[in-house]
Image (cartoon, rainbow, N blue to C red; front, side, top):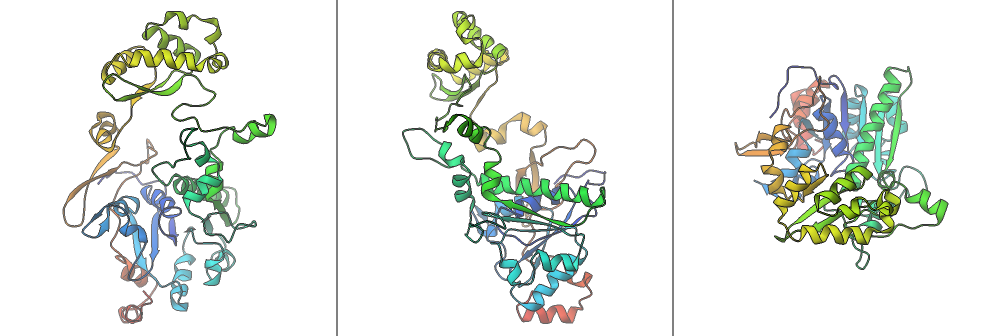
Length: 401
């Protein structure tokens, strides 16, 4: 766990998290890491399905412990009128609500934007869904895999002679959550600094992906150009590719600025290409990219990865190995920057978690505790709303909490 002696930047901000899995809850996790009190509302008995996703330790996902750090867990049956009222009571003193249900679901429970803003006019509500709160597709179920396809990312991933592939993480979900955090902080600034009012932030998974697709649409609109899959290379930027080494490993080389390209060519013994006027600028290098890639490959195949990296680093050419989890875990730079944190699971087992991003010089984020047990904070939070022990026991017996 990490500790610091300065107040976190979001201290005093209360967040009610109504979502499950990644899109939405990842945003709640980021806010919690920087000091917000994030109250995660979970279904009694089962909780967030993420608790049982991927690798488990004593029945609980290691992913859960990481993504849900610093959150409080309360179990509430959102389908029951009494449970819905508990959420309204929590929202009265909240700053932000995060949800990632299909549009219309919260409205059917009396917990939609129109209902909650009546409870708290200053509320900021982050709404993450597959296709957004409006439009002809709003009612469709949407997961990151579909959003990555609709947003244009999947079509570009892989090699041109093979079907599109996916990135090995749910990048659409995390991008949506990042936009959700940005939107929440923008809305909070408007509310607290500009004298504005509460509002909701509408995040569509496909739009979060589409938002990072660079020049995809301008190139199509202006020139009719459709970018295609290009394997490990970066289209229109040369050289930038993955190259095989003598020992069977691979090196990533990005020599795509004019000065770096010249240094790269000199480092691999190709002064002729370094001084070739056709290759002086990127547009010329793109035209002759095959020539350049062959020259680099001829050189890398004569050397092992470590030697390749040594030569390129000496020449100040951006390059690197392809990291596995084991490589990351052993890397001294990760350690020096605090990107591998030592923590302890509830049974005392030591575990390491990813460090917190971004790094603030005066008010850094921190890990206070790992993802909580299901309903761990239910009694304390209900007591804070004025519920007696007897009433809490009755609600629990009837499956409301």
